[in-house]
Image (cartoon, rainbow, N blue to C red; front, side):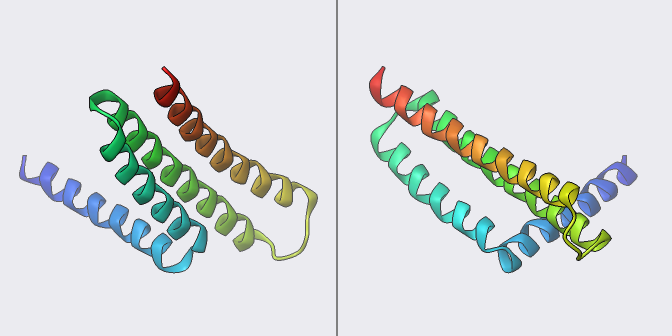
Length: 115
């Protein structure tokens, strides 16, 4: 059992290191954090219960997508700095995933405000 907790602590440190690195080195990640703080404050002020949870959870999903996008970009840049069509398409697809999660937040906001 002790080994389980030690491994969990180690994995948690790695995860926080990745989040901190994204915060320090990625403007887009900071942008989405700020957007989520504003969205979260508005949700807490305007909404109730499950609606707040939905908005907050989707905001975290956007941050996760941005972290995947950052990982994809770094991996591609590690492999090659030269322009390559497939590398560009991979980066664009990862960026598109961030956009889709952000759209999901917008759709959720519209739905909870209308219904």
